Length: 321
Image (cartoon, rainbow, N blue to C red; front, side, top):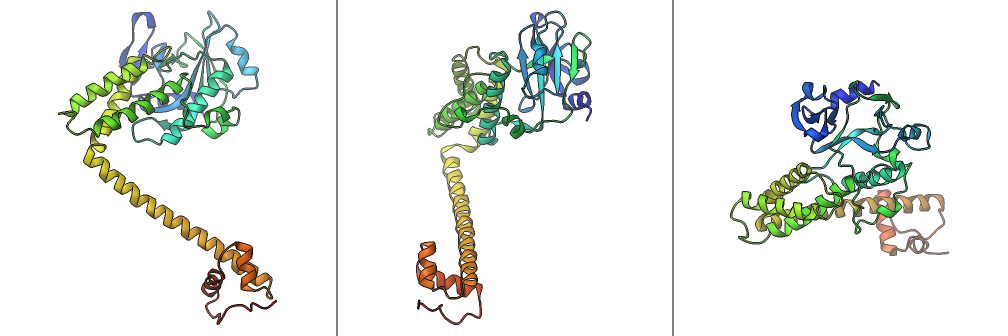
C-alpha cells in the first residue's frame, strides 16, 4: 500500500493550511493546501488519522521503541520534533448521532496512546506537518492501516472502561468530553417547552455553553472545533429532541427494545431446546424430572421442548428411575 497516496486521497477537499502558524491560517482548496508546510489532516467530523505531536529533540528514537509504529513520521530537521500519523482502516465519525460507544473507545485509545508516546497532551490535533512538503524529513514507516482493536492491544485501557467517568482532557479525550457534556445539556434544554423561539436562538445558546465547557480544559480546544461541535449538536437536538419529538423517540426506542428482548428470548429458548434434546439423545434412560433438575426448569418445559424437537413424540419420557 502506498501510504503517501493514501494520505493524499484522504486529504480534505478544503483544509486549513499555512507555511507559518504565527502569521495565521486560512482555508484552501485541496491542491493549494497540499503545497503548504502545515495542514489540516482530517475532515471536520471524520477522523482518518490519529496524530501526535512529539515535542522533543529525540522524537526519532520512538521508531526503535516498543510502541505501535506510525504509518508516517514527519520530523523538523532543525530541532528533531516530530508528528506521528496513524492511519485508520475505518475513519471514526464524530457528528451528533454517531455511536457513543465507538467515540468513547476512540477517545480512550487516543488518550492512552498520547501517554505511551509521551506526546504533547495539549496538542489540538487540527494541524500537522505536511508529509509531502520538502521542509520536513518524512519517514513512511508502516504500510498497513490500523484498526482500533490492533492499537488497543498495545495499550492499557482498563482505567477508561468505566463510562461514568469522563476521559482525561487530553487529545480527543477533550473532544469526547465536550461532545458528551454538551449534548446532555442540549437535550434537557430542548425539552423545555417554549424555551426557545427559533432554531437560531437555540444554536446561540448551545454555542455559548460549549465555550463555557471548553474554558474548563487546559489548554482549551480551538474555537473552530468548538463551534463545529456546537453546530452539530444543536441542529440534531433541535430536530429530534423537542418535547413531542422526545416522546416519539422514546416510543420508537421502546418498540426496538421490545423486539430485541423478544429476539433474545427466542435465541435462549432455541439454545435450551437444543441442549435438552442432546441430553435426552445421549442418555435414553434419563427422566424428564432429571433433565428439568439439570437445567433448572419445570418438567412441563422439558416436555414441550422435546415435543417441538421430535414431532412424532407421543408422550413424556418415563419418570421412573
